[in-house]
Length: 302
Length: 300
Image (cartoon, rainbow over all chains, first blue to last red):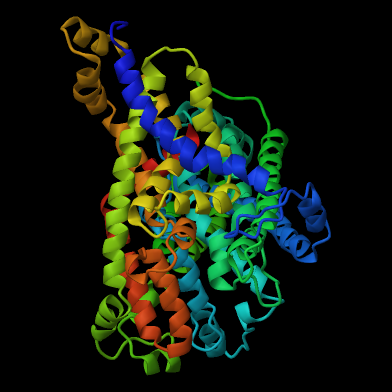
């Protein structure tokens, strides 16, 4: 294998590394540098201002408001999505009646799995635009349904009190199906003998789920947790297209803040980069925390 | 529908195992409830899509007057208006072109790099590998501002080539990570046998290793296809200006904004439907591959 391997290594590695360094590594590094300047883009003059951008960030109420919304998303979206995902996955994989072969899914489980996964293959843009119409105060699906049964409906995305929760609901709606399939795949990897043994001991299905399945799935739940936490810190596309942070900044998130700062009416690139740096450290912290908090012993089936 | 099957199951089950009859009956109620919940979530998933589909055939008056009603006739002119008037057809083709390019490039470069990481030893290998995989940790947002200038200075701003290169670059971390793991699982004995038979390094890769890695390649390709097809942030920043070059996501977002002024809801619904239907059809046809392609990456 040794002879003449370098031509291949060079040809195979140089183009990807070049592409990656130019478009990924160098922008990441530049962000840290730009975040310490007052650069307004387009013109060449950028003065180093040290940590001034970060100090201004600390006193920026809009940024804090956006971060508060991200924090609520972070507290609710992962938990609710994982609980719903686990519940549905459990129903589909082991909710059926006990047959001789041990556990099985409910009837029609493959149909449910197919349908639940739909939002995952749709673009977030389409999900955002579609739900914006569903929430429409006049012709929307929700308002007319409520009016139909004689209830008065809120204005959904138009009301600062409800808008945030409407966006949050869409986030959960669009994610649950993916985790149903993910948890389902992990559940079907659990050896059947374990279930047979548990059943011989007379455990109910709820106990089985709580004491056997979920502990065995913990690795997957942990991965889900990290992904959903990162997702909750983003939320940019949904928010920008559904409400653009409004009404009255009630749905603003940090990604929209950054985008508006950089590509909105003013092009404060230095300040926007500082927001980007803060986002990076937040994401990193949240990912590490999520891994730490949910840490358990690894289980392997031999 | 499914709930109706339950009593039959409940009757059949005690006969098989009379010992846990009380448990069964108690679960019967729970079963109906949880089945109800399963159906409820299906409805929640399907209804908005069905509504979008039906509304794409309705007239604007029908949409406003009775959101839950059925279209009086199949008005295909909504689709024509969206396809031509709102240029959704053009954007659809643009997206296809960009994604075809970017997925091909990602797979070529990703597979090549991953193969080297998995099968060859050389100095500094670990450093380069972690340089790639480290990219998984960083949000695209962090790079957004400088990326804009990198692309502009390279003369690629507002071009499809720019999008293709950027999509591919940002997909490399995951692709390399996944495929390196996959190439490592392939048996070395076949490669060695081929080498003994005088097969060169390049031929070994293209004629022996790539075909063996097909399942892994397909999974990552599906994953990349969907993530590139659904990309919105990058084109919005890197493809401003020239509307004729927009990708589908941008076209739909613009259609939604315009619809707010023009009041042509039917056109928006038709545009959305045009974008959704092919993706859903492909998904339903290849759902097993799509589901495993999208979930496999997360489980590694």
